[in-house]
Image 1 (cartoon, rainbow, N blue to C red):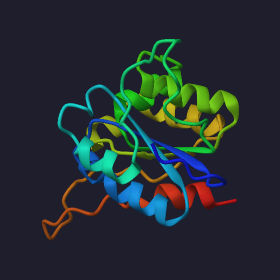
Image 2 (image 1 turned 135 degrees about the vertical axis):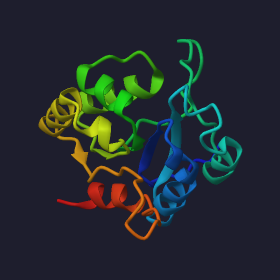
Image 3 (image 1 turned 180 degrees about the vertical axis):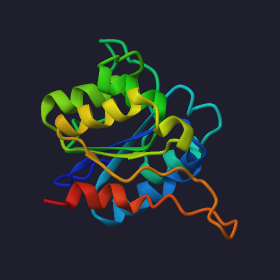
Image 4 (image 1 turned 30 degrees about the horizontal axis):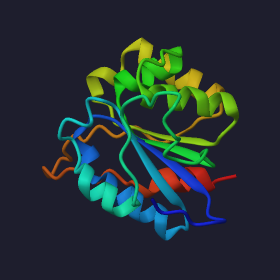
Length: 177
């Protein structure tokens, strides 16, 4: 385990979306900005959505997804900030409703309750983005103080290319006043 005294600690929560494969970009960018990083993934994201071994090599810490027992030591220090990216329709709605049924969602609920700064980058298909629950959840999260970036759909541009996810936007949201 890497322990760097004096550096702020960032929790990165990653969900099961195609863009999750690039979460190493966020970890690398955070480390360049002098953050120590620990990654927490939804159970679905652990099923091949990103390279957990590569992320563990970048952070020097295990990727967490399962609950620990009370006797187990805490693998990460308390967070100074949390980024959830990509945040899917399912996770975003559960978080806003306070349904902490996974370690990832419970971490997000607790961070909000503790006043820890949280930035979220939604990754939601256009068809889901118009669902009333999604719009209501976004509004509730913003009321809770969550810094929500522009949603990413991954839909192709007119020229057939797909836009990049823009991992750095989450760190920019945390740095914004």
